[in-house]
Length: 470
Picture 1 (cartoon, rainbow, N blue to C red):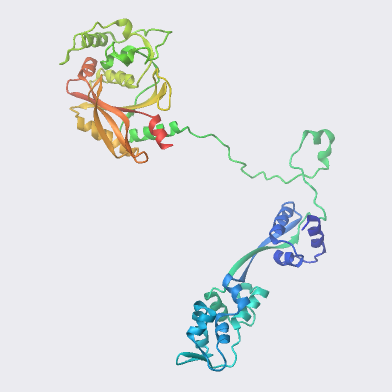
Picture 2: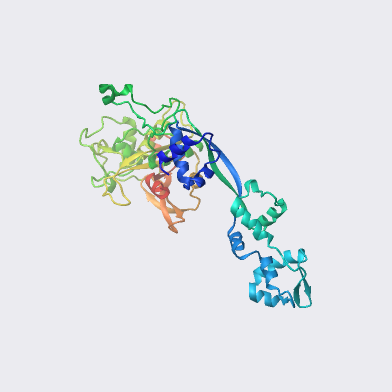
């Protein structure tokens, strides 16, 4: 139905249109299309709509079949001859098993037929098909509010129980003319433009109403990067375990803190330019703690605390080289030195860090030259390997990895050392997820830590669990 036609028809109505569905049927219009047009006109104030609901009876698929063929009971009665009767086998052969099974009940209940031996015979000369008659009225009248005038409610309930009719709710509108009703809708402007102001058209232009109370569209503020999400989750877990976060804002570190303080020899391959990013300017750091430097130099050259050292000349120019830190263990070394030399002496601590590290590696699907390292350490007296394994299990269980294995490994600054493997349920295999160990005495004793203090530590990358999760 065209908009102009609808407005003309409504203009002729003296009273309100009580039901849009009946209005659509009278004018042979599609009700759904009419509803869309009515809502549009109501939005501009030409009409006012009031929603209404009408409960109706509607024929089911089985009800439609009965409407055409007759009810099972009427068909069974018609199949029984007036003289002689029929056996059940004969009725089934003619009508089907389901029809006979359904139709027999109402006929026997109404005493319209009886059984004589193997045959069923008629008792009544005629059996009016009341079910079909009621269904015809439902088809024609609709049965408002689940009722039909002159039909007992029990009959309707029986038809619904037999799934011949169903009650449905029809939604429609009552219609009255709105405050801006007209035979033709005037298009309203949505915005005040510069051209309107220049020409003066704004004085005669009709504008759409503005809702100054609306909140407007939600502002899209962006989303957290997956790495930030996982980092925040790890930080929360470690803090819940009693760990304190270490300051990790020094990306440029000296070789002394990055390698030498960790008892990593100056001839180690990791200190080669092929594996580490060295800084050109400034090329060297200014200073390191002098007494600590001498103790580290001694442990490298001559050993101590049960170690024979590396037996090589310790070079100051190598130790003072600046580089982009290759691991956050350099931060751990600084914190342990500070812990050993704090006023009042050593106190047990738990530390963690999550920040960037840099490696001079070729980039591929599993390697980056810049990535994030998660590191945790516990410093206390008389710690054991069992404490390390228990702490690692607790951490990984909290991030959702419960199936763990530990494999012996070698690290220059930890002994014993272990690689950590987790079972990947999707890949169906064990995957390396971290490294761990107990810091060697050659690293801890030169710092000034007491002889009975042990430090357990573990580390993993942030990118690998993030890739698995996302």
